[in-house]
Length: 367
Image 1: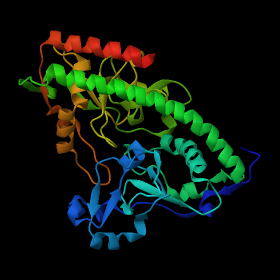
Image 2 (image 1 turned 135 degrees about the vertical axis):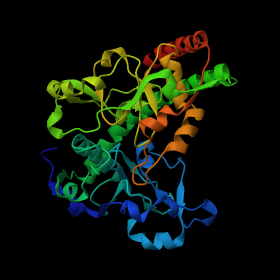
Image 3 (image 1 turned 180 degrees about the vertical axis):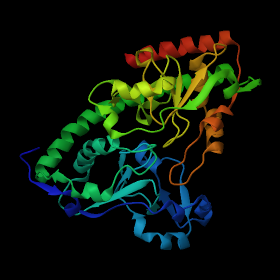
C-alpha cells in the first residue's frame, strides 16, 4: 500500500472517541425495555459482530446526558477493553443508541472511504494496539487520539471496492465453513443435554479441581516477540475449542518468571473478561504455554475435562456466570466466583462416552 496517498486518520473522520467514563453509566442507569428511550451499544456487539445479542437500555434523561456518545447506522464500533480490536459496522437500519464505556466509535467522512474497505484496513492496524495492551489487559488499550495521528492509505474508491469485493468473496467461503462448525457445536450441545440433563447430584467446580486461578495478570510490551512461547488469550478461546489463528508470543525468559502458571494438556481456560465464561481445553501442543488474564481450571482425575468444559459452556454454566459477573465498563468473573459453579456429576464412564463423542465430532470439524 506504499504507492497510495496516506493521510492521518483523524483528517478523514467526523467523530472518533471512546465511550463515556464508567461512572456515567453504572448498572443502576439501565432500564427495562418498556421504559427505554434507546439502546446501549456494547463490546459484545463488536466481538460477536451482530445486533442479535442481549440488549440493555437507558431512558430519555440518561440519553440526553450522554447524547454526545450517540451511535447510528454506518458507524464503526471497536472493542477497547479486555478483548480489544474487534470491530463491527453498525447496520444502516439499526436503532439509534449510545456508547458503552468499553467501545470506541468511528464515524467516517463521506466520500473518502468505503466503510467495508476501511473496516478491513482498521482491523489490520488494530492488531498493533492489541499487542500493546498494558497492565492487566482490562485497562483501555486503544487511544483514539494516537490512532487519529496514524497515517492510513487512501486508495481510489474504485480500488477500495475492488479490494473489498475480493476479500468479501473469500470471507463468504470462510463464513460458510464457520456455519458448518457451528452446526457441529449445536450437535455437541444437544448430545450433552440428552446425556446429562436429568442428573441431580452436584459438586462445586472448586471441589473437583486441583485449582481454579487466573493466568498471568500483568504483562508488558517488552515481553512480546515474533516467536517464542505462545501466550493464549481471550481471542483464542471459543466454545469448546481453541482457535490459534491469531497468536502472540512472549520471550522464554519472561515466561520463566511464571512457572506456576504453565498450562497442562486438558487444562480448561475460561474467558474472565470481554465475554466471561466461554471455555475451551488446552491441546497437547500448547502444554507448557501460558495464558494472559484468563482463568485456568485444572481438574482432579475423577472427572473428564471435556465434560466439565462443555458444562461450563452449557446454558446451565452460562446462567451461573451471568449471575456472578461484576463490573460496568468491563464485565468480568473472578476465579473465586467460577470455583463456586455447581457441576452436575455424572458417572465417569458416562463422561468418557461423551468425550469420545466430542472427539469424533472434532474430527469432522478438522475435515
